[in-house]
Length: 96
Image (cartoon, rainbow, N blue to C red; front, side, top):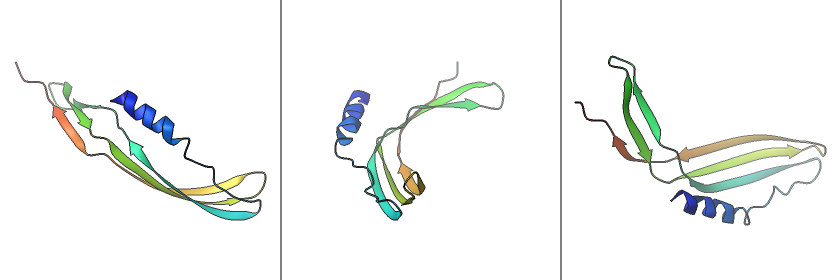
């Protein structure tokens, strides 16, 4: 599954283009793509300390909007983004 996501991510880089900004002008860029979050280990804080479980997520999406100004020698940008991946499973160890 992760190899498929890496191949998909690398193939989409062919489709991306840099922001087309001229010197001393402003620009806007829109981003959208797939996202895969790693598994999260959940720990207990109260006794007995130790692992409480593992949370696995589904493939989600990532979207963003960039506003910028090109000064010629450098660019100044501001980005707004949103990412979402739903929960797939929560595995907890059984006592005993």
